[in-house]
Image (cartoon, rainbow, N blue to C red):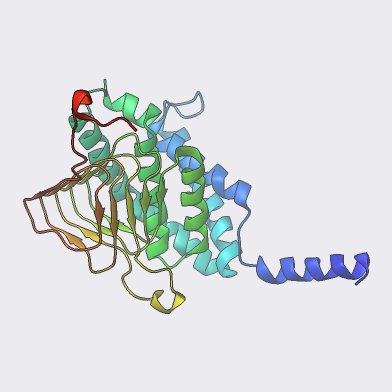
Length: 270
């Protein structure tokens, strides 16, 4: 194949494969602008209600443009944007509860302001909640761009299709993976390196529930791995660090991974 023919083949593939995908840079710009508008200190242009209203209208237009690149329908794109911004007050209220949970349970947190400014866990949760709203509106590609952007910034990988209750607490967060069909209740705490994943990667199971259910008030410590769509972690339970689970756990229990402690003077020399 000549170079000219090869380039033509690549061009055809790109035009066919990416015709319904929004611009990645514009998508990340939108999500950062939205997070900043809701949570970061006001800029000189956002110090009164009138300027804030203008900023919100600009973001609505921005989102409508992004959605249009997915659905190719102007009215549908505008409706999706309107529906998202109608849901935004509820999302903001839930995120305030998430921030409060982090402040309540992390003794290192000095203030709620520190949490929204400096905690990667809160940022990842916020981007997930925005993305999940669009996912529920059946706008699928855009939320994936948002959550993968948050993943690249924080090391926290939350699929936008997951269902997560209020007052969600992520501490440290690096290496956390939460799969698409995961269901997490209220007041759940998760530490770094936790995987809530699937037992099988088979395409045959793509439409079923592949990931675990975590009930209310569960704590999952660092390095734990919980797998399988039928795996349920009962409410008020504690999953210790580095535990591997592929079966359900009843409520009000503690699951530990005992490594054991051996005194040095009893160890055999190798």
